[in-house]
Image 1 (spheres, rainbow, N blue to C red):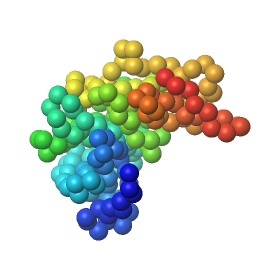
Image 2 (image 1 turned 30 degrees about the horizontal axis):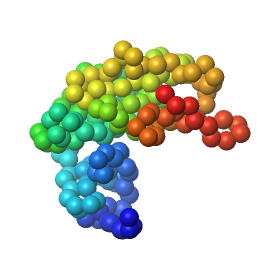
Image 3 (image 1 turned 90 degrees about the horizontal axis):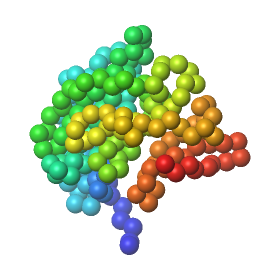
Image 4 (image 1 turned 45 degrees about the vertical axis):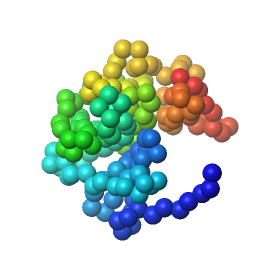
Length: 194
């Protein structure tokens, strides 16, 4: 396959990748918080409406970008968590066919890192989160089911393997249609498949 260079049609200078799915990208303009879904192959793009429900003040935020096979549409999930106690999570969902943001129920987990976006696999968005807001508490694998619009706990929430120290830097990735858990150890990069 030949390599083809594509440039996003709008003149955004600082772009952040929020996710990718089905050769389509979800990107954000860092300067003005504008978000777009862009298919670089067809060069089609759409700007998402702003979400009036974004909480003001200090908070951590992560996104997850996926595809709803049943309704044939792209989905963007945003989780915003306040940094002040009591810690509150606000979850919003965008569906491309409706072209609106909707507020969902909060979630009973805590974000580990604000820069780690959700990983899409088989109709679910996955993150590594914590059950408690305590430093070095156990990290767990949490999934958001796009079809049911809920965080799934049964058989998807899994404690990390005992061989992994809670203080290690971990991330999620999809490798050959399986979730993979890369983590950094003192001798280099290792992987533990899930």
